[in-house]
Image (cartoon, rainbow, N blue to C red; front, side):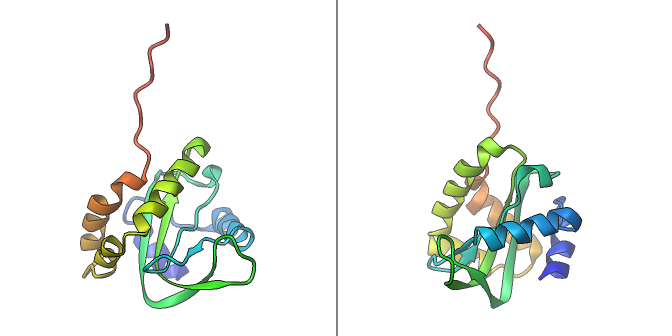
Length: 145
């Protein structure tokens, strides 16, 4: 998965996990598993904000299911078919973005549409429509009183 993920994430303008960031991502996944037993099993691995250079959302559809530790458990695994990796640079946005993303991933039709994408371009287009709400929007700064 690493090589394929890197080749697809980098051209999309995102930072592929490598070096210290990749190690931090693996460590976090071992400590806090992110496999979700949603209608289409999905993992939402995410790095701490200090390891993210460019905010966004990286997606990977898998040709074969890959086992991920199930979120909230120590010993269970989930055979994942989709990886959705939020890339957030602001720690305050993490919880809200993850909650919104998990809500969207519970929509089996939306996730199946992503899995059925014929190529990276179609996946990107479908993700923009279906998952854009999973990323926090920048609010304009409030004027000081």
